[in-house]
Structure formats: C-alpha cells, structure tokens
Image (cartoon, rainbow, N blue to C red; front, top):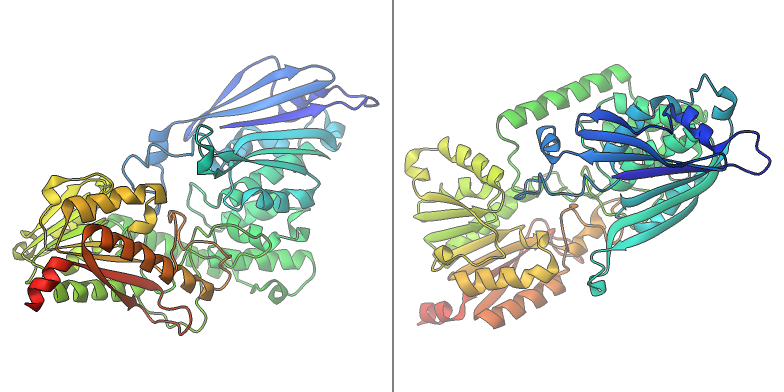
Length: 531
C-alpha cells in the first residue's frame, strides 16, 4: 500500500520544497521504519531538493496480524482472511498509519517551521489503488469540493483481459494548493469513506475523530451526510449524534440534518451494551444468521446515503417503507423446508451451509435420514459442527459436514434426493456460475434442487438504497424475477429439470417478494410420480 505526497516550490517562494521533511517530522536523508499493529510502515523520500520533494509512506501488511485482529463480520471464505486487498488498497489501515506516523503534521504542528505549517503548498497526492465502488464520480464528489483537482482512473480487473471491464479500484491523483495538515485530514477521513469499511470496532470516540479531523470543512461539505454515515459505518446511533453536533456548528436545528440530539452518556451506554452483545455473540460462535444473509426482512445492506450516487451499499440498518419487522430468514427457511417436503426427499444436501442455520432445522425433520452440509469456509463448518454437538445425538448422527467449493465437481455428492442453494448463487461471479451449474445440476444431479436468491426489483423499496446497489457487498448480482426465470429455465432445459417458482416473504403488488425461490425437479421423477 503506497501513498506519495509531492510538494513543488513556486518560483517566488522563500522556502525550499525539501522543507516538507520538517512538516512531516521525517528526515529526507533517511529511510525510517515504524512498527504497526498490522505490519510495518516505511517513510522514504524518492526525491528531495529545493524545487521538488516527494515523501512516500509504504505499508507492508502482515495478513496473519490482520486475521488475529479482524472484526466480527469480516469475510470467512476459504483463504479470504489471508488473501484479500487490504495489503494493497488504501483503506482505514492507511488512515491509521497517517495518524500514527504523520501525527504532528496531521494536527498542523511544526515547531521548527510554524509559518510553513500554516502555508498553502502546491501538493500532489498519489494513491495507486483506492477501493471505491462508487467509481470516479464518488471520488470527485468528496475531494472536489475541498479544492482538489481530482484525476481518478479506474483500474482494469485484468489488463490481459480488457473484456472483463474495470474493477472498483481507482488510481487516484489529487492536485491542489492546501495546507499539509488539511491534505492529511482529507485523506484520513475520506479514504475509509470511499472504501466503505473499517478494520476496527467503532465506538463514540469515532465521532470525536470525525469532527476533529473534519473541522473547517466537513460541516460545509455538500456530501457531509453521506460522508458521516460512511465514516461511522452507518451505525445509526453514532451517525445521529455526529449530525446533531455538526448542526450545532452551523447554529442549525439537528432536525434540519435529519438528525436528533443525542445525550452522549446515553449513547455511551448504548454502545457499551452493543459491545457486550457482540462479545457474547463471538463467545457463542456468532449469530444465528446464515452465511452473509441478514436475519430480518430489512436485511438489504442499503444505507440512507445522500450526496453521492453510484455507491454500492455495504453495511446494514436499512428501513423498508411500511414493512413489518419480521424475520425474512425464518420465512425463507420455512419455505425451503416446505419445498423439500413436497419433493419427498430423504437424503438432502445443504450446499453453502454456512454456520448451520438451515442444518439445525433439517435435523429436526425425521423424514430426512441423511443430511450433508457443504461450505467453502472451514471456520463456518467448525461453528456448524459445534452447534450440532449441542443437539441430541439421535438428531446429529444423520449429519455430515464437508469442506468444498461448489464450482468444482465432487463425486461423493452424486445421487442425493435433493440439494439446497439458499442465498448462495448471488455470491458467485457470473463467469463462474456455469461451473456451479455443471457441478450441482450436472455432476451431483440430485432429484430436486431448491434455489433462493434476492429479488433485485424489491430493492426499490429500501429507503436510501442507490439505484444499482446490492444488499450485500459480497453479492456479484441481484436478479430481477425475469432474469432469475430466464436463468432457471435455461438450467432446467440443459440438465433435464422442470422448474416452478415460489415467492418468499411478503410480496409487493408490483415488485414481487423480497426473495425468490425456484424448485427444480427432474423431469423423469415427475413422470414417474404421475404414473
């Protein structure tokens, strides 16, 4: 992960560009190293003379340290804890490094050159890889109003395969004449905002950080609400308190921000309770959700984002207009169980079983005499195994757990009566979906296959969810009912299955249900049953 800051001396300036070293409190003649909780930070100067000086902050991220300190909700897919973009993409890890390594400069302190610390300098900031699912437009909308000229270049998924298109990473170049402390504060706040996630648990101290480093610019920023929500990871209690305090800066009523005034002591108690709840959840091997799907009807990972368009929703607390608060996950599992009963299945595969939410309900059904759970995440399987051990032995002796990727064929899965893919296919890259189809419908070829997936049309009912956004950051797609029907019809025709569709959840008259379900049955089985 690399950040470079270049200062160019104007012709009439009385200071030298190399004095950037004084402002950063780092000697241009040395390469300095600073130990971080997640790796090592290096500061060096590729060039440093009177006319031009470049300081580089290079982070070497240790993936093992990241795993040790990962937060609840981090990715659990196989190797995903160790192989990810955190060592290479500018995120909250870089913000922490800016604060710890360039802390004096971030606060605008420089005893040796105090007048230079208050001087607007011609700066260029370069970041080779910035995660930004909102694209170049989002980068322009957050940095542009602060006086930066923004050049954001989307990076291709693979230069060797241009037909794959662009990734959600940008090469970001910012140029402008600003105080160094202002430039660093913009980076400190806005890099995690563009990324949309943080690597540490948030508490009330985050509000103070946001207001401290956003002082002088955040309260007047046209996208301040969006920035505030993203920076605080859409923790609504924190967001409301932050917006109320921002309103005070403008001598406005908090309600004008869509905020409410929050007693900080009450908020502290609320956060403490949430922390205790999260700790208890970790001790009991996590919550009752299945994989990455949420456990309530308001599961869509939509935010009430305003001020920036095109961003992908990544973390929760949405509100569905006039929707009753009830468990979509429970309704989904009930629908799957009913569909399994209708097939007469006795030997069942739960493909993508996660931490075992559906497995616990399958074992309660005496009609299922053999149940196999398959998942790519070893950790999820271990949690599922521990949960199975809490149940009576007469139930769990019918259950087997296996680690495997659904895009690869497994001969041991062939010949089962039914297979379930509950909220699984949307996590598979579209180019690899054919491999999953071949593995499940072709190689395993169970008598019936039950597939559930979000109904993308229903997303319009989630307030504040941007057009084209998904309910979860790991979703590769969210199909409309027509798209799902086309896919299911093609798969059924290819592999010899009949298919019927059933709604899951409370449907909207125009947009349909929140979850859609397809029940595939082998045409030969249907004909045999009819006979």
